[in-house]
Length: 298
Length: 178
Image: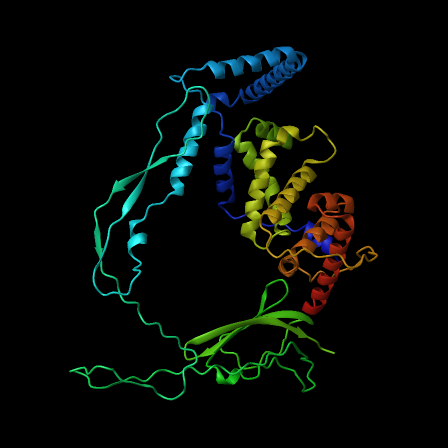
């Protein structure tokens, strides 16, 4: 007799052969081994390192105390820094003021996209004649002036640059056909003008019947009493595609069928809520429904 | 090569000594890590990270001097497993504790037929959070307060997880007729 704890606690596993190789590879990266002659002095080197870090820590602490104690000194330093900033000449750009103006310039430039296609591709009139469109491209110009005293937010001056005129023939819009709401009788399309080749063109349109509404139960009772023992979806038999996936609450798939025949009896599934995902359809028209179904066995 | 010289070598970052330490602890530790994840590959990954921590922090071992080397390494592996779980939250849903039940000590004796592999495979399906708490409490023997800190949840939630975990496992063991 043994308990779960004993079994699990005493359980040993053999690591795979390359496990140590991987580990030692990682170790080589993270803690590279000292060279052969240095291996013996590794301990002393580590000691020295620790000593050094302790020293460094002490020095840092000392510095902190000095800083805290000398607030006047600190403010003098700040003052000096401010003074340095103010007096810095233009020829020596300080790293504080210059990047600020730079970012403002680039950001403003990005806000003005220029796309010549955008302005010419949409014809405003339905005329079939070629339309001449000339566009002026806004070319953002980088501001070059920069004052020496303080950072200034620079807005780019927009200068128009000439662009070669383009000739664009607008395309008539393509007719869009939607499969919905098509009457079930064939439609004869007759052209208004006589075509020398085809007098009359008959086209049969594929009519898509809306799939009958499915009735999906939200509960079934697989207890063998002959009533509601299976997860039956009414109306599914008229679909030629019927993929059913059922998952439990943790997302684990408990049932799956690529052609569901209303035969899932919930075996191996304890009572509870399950989630189904049903993809059904016919004639290439597909629809997916999701929902929950409860299994009760009372 | 005794354990003292192995440890000394490991402190010097000597690869041979590290290998010796790895060899003597890896099978046990792989068993520990496997309890918290779903495959040997995952367990090996966790164990590798754990061993890196062991080698990096070996100089801290023995400072507090409250545990044996085995329990020290094991606690690193357990923490590594919890970290791994946090990084790869797979099936964990925030469960609201509905009731706090009184938990009687776990007394189920199991037949020796119950093999560890089978049990582990069963536990692979156990809800992640319950599994971690179950392991920490029933196998590792941590206190509820410690577990609550480790998984960053209130103590009562931990109790509920443990209760549900036990229920779940008992039910499954019965179902599988182990």
